[in-house]
Image (tube, rainbow, N blue to C red):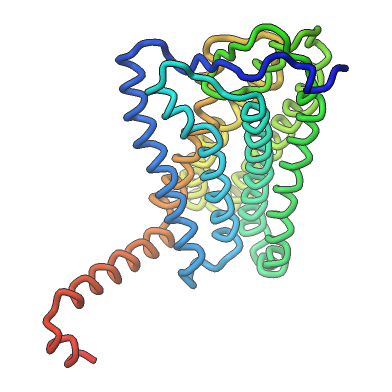
Length: 323
């Protein structure tokens, strides 16, 4: 196969989400606000998990790492997409396109394994509570996070191994807001059937296997709680229902796009928004607004900030008397 230097295509044209000028202005405002909320929301979780001693537990350690991955996942393409809404020519260099493919599979692959790790943490906490501290030690949590990054790296390098050297000698228009692997491979100057099979064998199997593991762990948790009491079952179902919603919104588009990439549809780029932008904003909402410990930590931060503000506004004499 010809190497990358033989490709005559030096850049790709991204069609984005819409050609309408009015819609692009609306999308610019909407996604700018959404992106800021993603960064600030997840950054707040990382700060609280790091500095609040009450949140120094395995579950919140994994949650902090998930928030970091969410920021990365939302940042690999969203800032460029937002800038492109104000640009007439939406182009990306060949190397920039390859970089987007690298990062999307690194972060999504890592997040899939991290979500399974968090589900495993809940399984141990509910089904094996007496052994929780021993099983979910800091060493175990660190290993789980390292495994998630290792899987992400192996996953993305295996994708790039059959993508980076593809010959691109003609069409260079990508009908999406970022370089999505199924759409980019279809632009190569060769029969992409084998490439599509490799995509299924890689991304498709990873998505299906981790999704099945998650759903299986949720079922085991619900069955275990059901045998304890109906009240506990209702509480567990209320908590897991929100988590399952996020999992479905994240894995559903991934499975649809990568388990059967042979045919692309206009709805594909809309589905891509779910796992690149919407899921990173849902995680802070699910794990903070519905979590008592996180809400208590946020309340302490706000109270401390307001108290500091009041003290700073006091006259110097009064402040000295307080000390």
